[in-house]
Image (cartoon, rainbow, N blue to C red):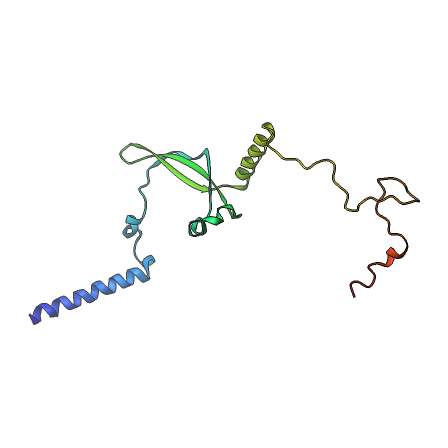
Length: 165
């Protein structure tokens, strides 16, 4: 029994040391030891191409905890779908799909199309052409026009001089 312990204990120490060395310094081991972490690579027959499909992403953790936040403004990210065709080692064609963040050019194209859709279907709201003036109009004896701006007369002229002190 003592002989087995004498031979097994150093083997356990060596295995533990190798595991510790591998976890602390993975770059010290050759690249062929890391092949399990890489996806299978084949021959790319058609590189990534945008499909035209888009989606929005947002953090929904707050919304799930408080459903009242559905109407609160939040940050959205525009996602774009892409696909590519890869031929495997066996000769099979595989379709790979990924979603990525949109570029500024893609985001501008989406917004442009959205605004075009709104204007084509008369869904935009416009600001009225006639903007009311800030000062109310009053008629004075010097200027009887209804379009004249408000003018202070007499004792009313010094109405606000000391109000801020």
